[in-house]
Amino acid sequence: MATILIIDDERPIRSSLRDILEYEDYKVLDVDNGVDGLELLKKEKIDLTLCDIKMNKMDGMEVLTAAKEFSDTPFIMISGHGTIETAVEAARKGAYDFLEKPLDLNRLLITVRNALEKGSLVKETKVLKRKVSKTKEILGASDGISLIKDSIDKVAPTEARVLITGANGSGKELVARWLHEKSNRASAALVEVNCAAIPSELIESELFGHEKGSFTSAVKQRIGKFEQASGGTLFLDEIGDMSLSAQAKVLRALQENKITRVGGEKEISVDVRVVAATNKDLLKEIDAGNFRMDLYHRLSVILIHVPSLAERRDDIPTLATAFCEEICADYNIPTKEITTEAMKALQALPWTGNIRELRNMVERLIILSDRKITDKEVNSFANPSVSTHHGLGGVTSMIDLDRMDNLEDFLTFAEDKFLSHKLNKNNGDVEKTARAVGVSEERLREQAKKYNIV
Image 1 (cartoon, rainbow, N blue to C red):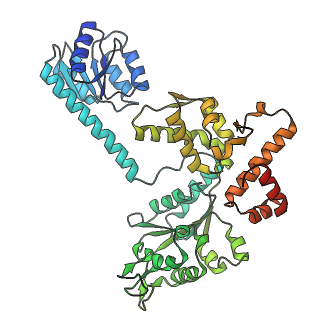
Image 2: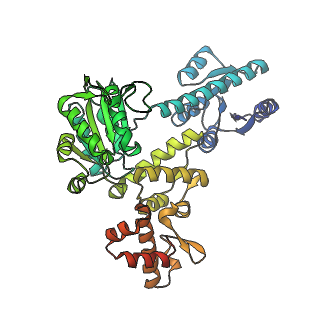
Image 3: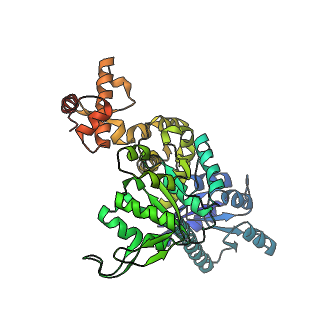
């Protein structure tokens, strides 16, 4: 059911319009002045506004101008002193239509219906554009982000290969997209390959393609990602998870700008700029024999490190506000306010999941909170994996120190959370976790059993 706001200082007009529109199954709100009307537009989900021009306190044209600064709600202006000049001015300021008093019932209803349809199309178009456009702005003004933006501006127009490092969810893919968008190859394709998501036996076929009959399931020829990206950019995400045999072929492709499809003999020339990303320390992977040093040096002509969210906490208010506006727009609801205290609470969280975790948190807060997002909601709905302690028959907030009577309670709580986090990070591998945290495997098993976390 569409919601229509009536702004008119004449009670009989408001009552007549309300009766007509409610009879047509519209939800109607009405106020007698422009100031209150603007407040309702900010707080409520309004689909259409009918606004008188001549009013006390604030005339209709001023209301229209102010509303267009923060809302896309269609306006139909109404007046008992209508002239062509007034109608033209209303249209110039963004009004959908202009109606003269006394209002013609049929024209009113047709205009309302058409304005609502247009408003709906405008909202749908914005949502679709947001979904289609994957390249979003790199938000933030911290030193680390400023350095990244500067590096992109300098490096993107060149043909230099770039290796992007950083933790999962920190925004490496976004950096790769902007390197492509600002490059001389922006009009060609950006082809993405997640090396961690493709089985090692299929990665070569994915990258270089294969000929029909080259293996059991090769029922037809396949064009690989290198060929698809020719003339553009190939983004190799999580390249640290690529098999050694695939690494050797990628190295050859970078050296010679030629590939050979699996099962084929013909060399195919490709013109590809490679941008790679990893959350691993590739130098350690080289020492462990998991990554080729020559490939590392081929890929890392330019190194860009994306800091974790914990290293750029000053950017959290900017990011949270942007996510809040975007998500509320997707849900077609008024943008919710995040209070100063809530922002401080968000900045205090550990953010092991980085930007991805922050966006999910903001979405959760929008869904579960009322019109304002406060620190109470942040503390209540914080990510359970880092902010709650399951024990003693209840759930304890990670920052709720009032529940702890002495230092021993706090140390026990901290040890529980620390070991839980490390075991989760290592997928429950006790041996690997014990090495990482510097305790014996036997000690870790005892503590894990004590806290019931394995």
